[in-house]
Image (tube, rainbow, N blue to C red):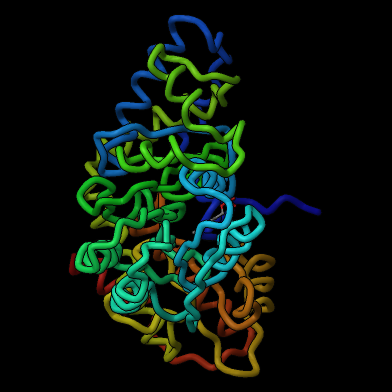
Length: 388
Ligand SMILES: *Cc1c(COP(=O)(O)O)cnc(C)c1O
């Protein structure tokens, strides 16, 4: 196949575009992971990553995908047969539930329509109904990457506090960390799960758990079998600047650089940029006369937008056409919305003009695929960008 000229537009909601600065940092020679230079790297990275989680506590880093970090959160805090409360917000919530069940947990899975986030009122009601405190953890996906819906974690926390329920709060921030305002400490989250290839602008390969004091204490009694995922050997080695097994050295070089970039821009500005790009994307979608999958104004994701196609139109055909004609990748519909939606990633290493180019490609693709849309979507998005 002939190589297309110009840059590929990687507009899936992860993996995202990796900045040149990060690529260059990762191309340095691999160093001794037990030497003094490595201890400095560990020290810098473990400090600098904390503000992104909104924590002053420990963050455990694994060479893993996000799925590994999910497993780590469960096996370090829970015991076989424990009940956990989880919510069907979309495809990733479904996958996390399946994992929990394979590990021997009993999941109370609250059904959902894939158009809303976790309902704090349901959290309150379920916990109030559990006076024996059998539910040991509430599991929530902060940003449902399959639907473009962001759950209101602060309100989930408030519901847990009002019920005076001791369950742990475990939150997946895999596609929100570094793109969406998030506060591990302030929101009383016990384990925040994330990974490298979405808002952190890195290639896949690093998994994260930010861990509260309460989660560490729960870990002392947690009975699920664990070895590779055990926090303790990592935390102990980290105190001396190392990891207990070979870390992903070059990805850590990349992480150091990506964290410097986030710090240079300033996290409030990073979050504002994502909110703006999300608003501009929605302006285009509305002007086209299409609908977003997210149907709650409070819950639109700053990181991505899932666009519903009218009945009779196949979203995967639109994506294929856009890939072939314009060399741009969009996210596929996953699970029960396969073929019905496509997803526009607007997270990570991204600016106004990248968004304008992305939306222009989407608009041309929709028209060429024969999807009936109204004119002027891109213009509406540009208007939002200019007004900012
Ligand atoms: C991407 C993603 C995952 C899975 O992460 P992997 O790195 O593919 O294992 C889990 N949850 C959410 C919300 C995601 O976006």
